[in-house]
Amino acid sequence: MSLALGYVHGQNNLVPNPSFEVFDSCPTAGGEIRYANNWRGGSTYSSPDYFNVCAPSLGYGVPASLHGSQNARTGNGYAGIVTSTNNPLWPFQNECREYIQAELIQPLIAGLTYEVSFYVSRSDSSEYISNNIGAYFSVNPDTINTPSGYNVFPYTPQVDNPLTNPLDNDSGWTKVSGTFVANGGEKYLMIGNFHDSQNTSVVFVGGCTACSYGYFGFYFIDDVSVVLMAEPTGGLNSDLHTRNLVYPQPTEGIFYLRKAPQSEDSWFEVLNGQGSVVKAGPVESQVQMIDLNGLPNGIYYLKTDSGLNEIMRVLKR
Image (cartoon, rainbow, N blue to C red; front, side, top):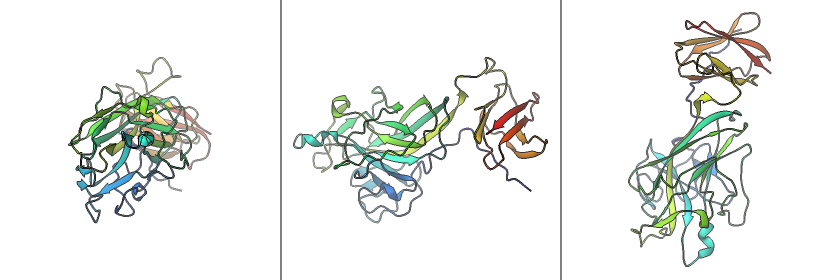
């Protein structure tokens, strides 16, 4: 019986379709984020937008659209959401928000640190800068069924853009990023503004008085990333920086090899209790993810090829 080679680069992005390049249909109207594979709106009734070069009209095309002109940071597509409103004629709309959501490729692991980043660009149609936007991770999909569907979601994002990082660029892209330690099991990512109007930083900049969307803070989103940081956190030996480590222990299928800084490992082998190699592959980064799913529960041994010649025990349950 032969087993397929299995390895995953330690810096693999856990967000599927991160730059909105893969799609089922070209956008023809607003609210069609569902056309971008793996993405949807955060609320049943909200309408985040999808923009792509393939759009048959200028309404939701790239670079030109109803919201102005912006090239994709990567490829041909991006998303667009409302993060704030400031309409004096309809103040009841000032809590209007839109969110986009995706299911991660795999759940996050408790106690490990993840780096989150995405890029935003203020649309030309926005007369307001809204510096509040963040990323929220949850175990279950969060679809809020409200009559309007545009209300502020009552969640605290694990990563939130600091006000010291102004999101005023309407000709290029601004990076929003941060890190957090996972509680474990988080599988869904949602991006948007989780602050109400009293706690949202909104600045009038003008420049689009004829725009029907002028009172919105509207932002394009591209290149969403969630990656495991190179350092595990908590519960590890004091010699964390001097030897190779495997974690978590035990594992339900996925575990990580963290190379010591001086390690020259370039290849790994996983052996079963009988000493047979059941998985092997190159070590491509400081943190290597190794998948034992599909193998029976039990004790395995990880062997690396460096001068350290370590053999590390891995318990799969």
